[in-house]
Length: 264
Length: 224
Image 1 (cartoon, one colour):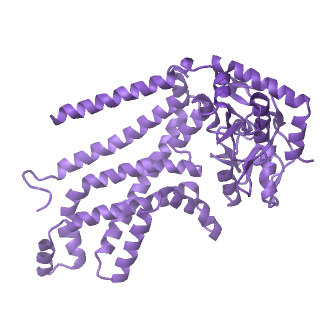
Image 2: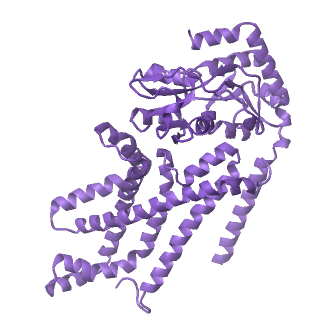
């Protein structure tokens, strides 16, 4: 009797697992994303919570940033209201998975457009161009990426900086963290000699802690794009977002957002 | 994504192997240290010096009831604030050993307590010292009882060792995470991860079963 019930529990589990897996696999059964968004009345957007000034939680516990404002402008043009957005946190590591699992409709999270990612997800047209830079303690001897040999450099796992620093400084000791806060606090604790990621994000970190400085050199061009799940049903949604982006660029809203978050 | 791409795994095998070496090193070093700590703490708790008893009891309570990740971060991020800079791997080994040592001490203690007090009294009556009672009478019998739960503590240790990936130690979990990130084939790599950890745990289980059989006395129950 005991053996039979154990077996039937196991079979039930396998059956549920099978159903669960096939449910996850059948994306083609899903309806058109644009229709879903319009019916739902809001866009679910994946943004970063720790990347000032693009997506961050401010002192008043509110989520703010360039990517947040941009997404609000997009939802204003598609759904008619800046508040028709729900934000969810993503990190450099989790943003692509959040898209592919359908947790979010789009991702606006300092994501660089590159060919490798374009095989897996779809990108909008670029909305900002950043560059990879290096951050070091104010009194450091490191003046450029050439000085990084045998030094410890912090990168964020899943970012383009992780790939490029391997080529720019092949003899550097690369330490990978999952979030910017984790990485920066390790740098502050003296666990590494430098940190590398996009200049925009480093600026945000340096602004919080003046015992660090960002070196002048930019090693790459990082065009940020909005990410979409690569699937036929997201095509009309992508078209709507890209059209909105064009409008936002042409009517001056994009420069307004840029001036607000990157005043120079 | 469709299908299971085995080629991406094959390409990553050199990285996975180097990660595995680090996981094995950390697991082995921590197991030895954890066992030493566990035995010592268990002995202190049966000691007649009340200070030793008290301190070791507090150690066990605090360590068992706080998450390992917090303890790991205390070593990695907290100690540098008071000037102690240990390498990430050392932080991992120390933290893992201290954590698992607390659990091991409890396993040993319950094994020792399950030995009938008559044994202890008889040994004392025969003139054995405290240390001799523990070493020659109690511990050999307790060993038979504690081997299975001890085995599961070592299995937990191997699984917990994956947390060192959060402090930049390139163990097998770090490698799997990074490779799955770079190739976007999350499913393939996490299946590999599950298989690897199951294999490691399985080896420990086999060894524990072997020890159990070797130490068992036919026809005799574990406790009197």
